[in-house]
Length: 461
Image 1: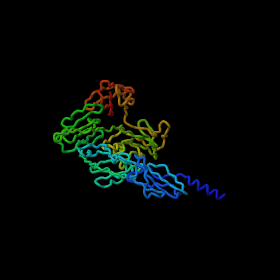
Image 2: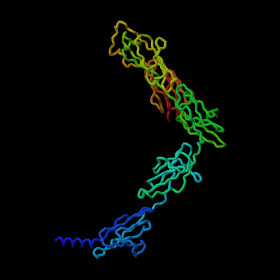
Image 3: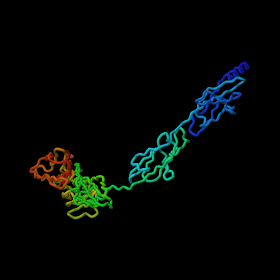
Image 4: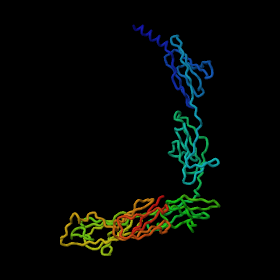
């Protein structure tokens, strides 16, 4: 039985057809090793050119392995073996090679082509992109030195220099190729005028816009918000321009300059201004509302709190005298007297306003006054009479909520952006609202003065 099995194994081996293993596609400048099973008595390798029908014996190729190089691309290889006197031949194996076009770079971003170089305006960013299939083992260079950390296919460029790159395809990571050309980048200083300065003005304040020095001439232009027409600002022919919140906000400004006969124009810069609600005071704590004043039992503590955004340069007063050390938004009150407060928003610390009302506090020493649900002053708000404007922006009409003035007289005036009064009227015994017809108004920004309030209105068409 043992003899029979051995004979069968030898017969099967003798009939086993050799198979060629190994890389059949080579990277450029790379080699490999073909091999077949290591169980035969003899080996002989053959080669056939791609365009020939004749296979040729390879001298000395008499082991189960065969070294191949890029010179063997587009050739067929086979191996003839023998075992126990029986010869067998493998199928042919074609060796091919990967072929890549030379690396190239695409330029983009803010680059402008010059004669043999790339141009960037100061502050702009250009982009170099190494094109496929070179996406592995990338190194970018500037002035002959590697750019630290730059190993991706894209390089963002903001400075002048001589750039180049090397990389390899992912399929052949060792096939590292250089671009072969220098990418010269020149940075051109920005000669366009740029506007800097105060673009957000506090109420009733002035600011200054400026552009670079060194031009031959200057002319400033102004375009009101909501219009498409810009006008030259009379007499504005220097590198600076004084602006005010009352006349110039919101509006767009630009400056036109000349240099050596060339005319250059800046981008427009929007100037706007802050608009704050009038300040109010919140009362809470142990205060009890009286008829036009606050009641405080002796030993209790009431609180007055100045409403936001008035949180800066705060001064509290009692009986027309400044209260020493009281500079916060909240005042704890334990004594009677006439209180007042003033303050400003943090963004406009010089815009100091007061609610315009006196906060009278009467101190009761016998505890005879008790708080009730109706008289408790918790979270009540004391403020100047508030007028509301809606809708805003508006198109055909605007509504003023004057319910706080119901039954009283109130003067309304509307001023255009250029300072011209375009509407004025005295209203008597007003109800809860006043409707203002805007059909004759041009598109733009207007300021409505109602009582002691000034409201900004944007008219659209």
